[in-house]
Amino acid sequence: MNQLRSVKGMHDVLPEETPRWHFLENTYRDLVGLYGYREIRTPVLEPLELFVRGIGEATDIVEKEMYAFEDKGGDRLALRPEGTASVIRAFVQHGLHAQEPVSKLYYIGPMFRRERPAKGRFRQFYQAGAELIGAAEPIADAEIIDMAASFLKALGIADVCVQLSSLGDRESRLAYRGALVEFLEKRKEELCGDCLRRLSVNPLRVLDCKVEACRAVASTAPSVMGYLSADAAAHFAQVRRALERFKTPHEVAPGMVRGLDYYTRTIFEIQGRSEVLGAQATLVGGGRYDGLVSELGGPATPTIGFAFGLERLLLMLGDNAAAATQRAVFVAGVGDGGVDRAHDIARSLRAAGCRAEVVYSAVSLKSQLKRADRIGAIGVVIAGEDEAARGSVTWRDMRDGTQIELPISELTARVEAMQ
Ligand code: HAM
Image (tube, rainbow, N blue to C red; front, top):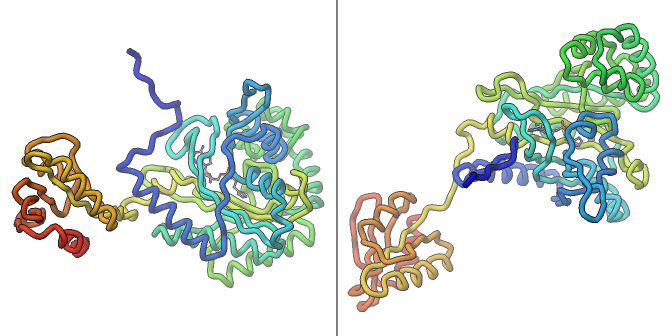
């Protein structure tokens, strides 16, 4: 029979890998908790319209990469390609703005984009993100950027430098759009068919095209940073000043392009390089998106956020992520009723918070000791018939192989002392 396999670009995380995921997720939760972020969980399926409006119709994500379909009831749905639009939808839907002046929300979960799979690029991938809703001040931008950099530091990923740019406000964008169209019109013959269309629909997206010839044109295009309004330029300068104050290393990257349309003012990324990832890979991307809450039907609210790609972080981690699994005890059942006795003892050990494993069928002590060895047990409780008659068990220390008989009432204390 044909063996079924996981969908291309979507991967199982096997038990031996999950401790590293836990390390990553726990470090993230602990860190963002220090800044007052609380978790929000939104569905992976959303109305397609949310992403068309939120991310932008003419973006690669919406045009080419989205898993979108009509369900059996005729509703047009999409697997979320990112978390921000969903978080803001939930924020508006539940009227969170009426509950607190500033909402600090974080999330960890799978996202879906039908991209060409490569190292560090998948069709289902996990993001850990944060959204700061309700603060317009430049120091808010600096705080969240610093939080992203601090997460990498907490993971032991050193020497990170934040790449920073600004897309300006509506006024800056209009001025820039004119200049960009003028530039692109002159280089029209070099652009791909998609970009010729983008030129009239959404010229900024030409800068995001992956076709080599278009990238060459984009690399010489004027930067939006040259067209910032006085207000947007002042905001950007203050963000930089605050980052200097926080001693967060950063540099200005005037040519930075983010793949989503909702950004305004500050945008940022942090790149990482590892042996596995090869070339530079973007570990985190984010920015301000002050128009999205009102676009999705809420009151005008300033917002900024970011999202890390967890698989990329794992590739960077190396062996930093120590797996802190609790050490196990194995309970071996010997003789008549041995399996039942072993399960009784394992249950009482677990009730006291000790990890205890047992077999499910009567097998020889030798093979149970082998199993204990394989799971890395620190000790084996041998629940034999004779000991049971005396109200005791045999305790075998797996580190030196010594065995003693002890009253069953002392077992829990003995195991706890070894943890
Ligand atoms: P993004 O830059 O599209 O931003 O994605 C953020 C991060 O997700 C990337 O830097 C990368 O690490 C990871 N990522 C993206 N696509 C893939 C993929 N196919 N495979 C593996 N990892 C991937 C956003 O999604 C915005 N929502 C970030 C944000 C939050 N902006 C404001 N708030």
